[in-house]
Amino acid sequence: MNKVKNRVLEQLAVKFENQDKFSIPDVLSVAEDMGWTRSNAYTFLNAYPKLGKKGRYGVYNLEAALIPFRSTVQNIGVTSISNGEVFIPEADPTFVAWGNFADVSKIIKSGIFYPTYVTGLSGNGKTFMIEQACAKAGREYVRVQISPETDEDDLIGGFRLLNGETIFQKGPVIKAMEAGAILLIDEIDRGTNKIMALQGVLEGKPVLIKKTGQIIKPANGFNVIATANTKGKGSDDGRFSAATIIDEAFLERFTITIEQAYPTSSIEKKIVMKHMEKFNCEDVEFADLLVAWADTIRKTYEDDGIDEVISTRRLCHIVQTFSIFNKRDKAVELCVNRFDGDTKEAFLDLYTKVDATVSGIGEYPNTTGTTDFNSDVEGTSQF
Image 1 (cartoon, rainbow, N blue to C red):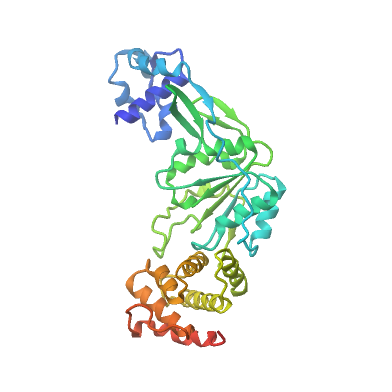
Image 2 (image 1 turned 90 degrees about the vertical axis):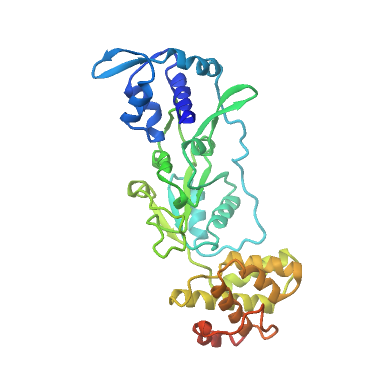
């Protein structure tokens, strides 16, 4: 509580530089974004001397409480401190353009403010696609990773102590706006209602930094693209337990939603081969087998025959592991160890059926629990 109280006093000292007497509306003007209600504001003010009333509200003297904060904020500056978050990403030689890449590239090249929401299962290249579209277009971008702890301070900015002075550090959102960059909000469905601080940003209009009174106008070219595993309605099947339900008014500010699926087998093979080239472990047969294996698992997943999938990202992890150990079975086993016992057993059992060069990966016997895969494996006999 003391930490929040001090934060309120600090912001009152900044916003009301020459004022010592405060009412409930004054406190709420700096504390509402922290979730404070009128009751919280009254409890806070009631600890200080009451001077009387102004209209319907009591007025309280906070002069003594503000002295230590006034002594530090009188030299407050507004700075970016570091612009390292804003940069043009490098083109990655392993990237293969496919699916929605052409559409995302057009949006980025247009320079138009066009908030875009990209949704799809984990590991299918959503974030990588946006990054590489920026690289191809030569556009600066800023990536913000959302978590349940992300709040307005993380996004818009907040006060930091630098060389003994209190400095307002602009957050990545403000830096992207000023630079006219692409703001990539990654895993936006992992946030809480604190991400509502971005609602004004998603309108493409000037934004008021409440803590400093500065108004930031978005430079030409500024745009927001968000990625998520869900459509903002939560995860019904529990696969993405950290995914939250996003406010409908917030979602409505995205102009379009792009649905990203896993790549086709031919595209996925190109991706796998690119990674084999990167790690100097080319094996065309192994690439074919991995792609067929992942495709069979995904089809079984879609038919509700299993609860997990092998993502494109996991195939790339297998390639990297193969480059280290030079053993197909070991690479596959190490990279599916993260799944629960039954799923891992099923995945490994299936791989032994598509790859004649290995057998009995790990110590898992065949079980009736893997029969769902058997009919699908016939379609991969050409490998």
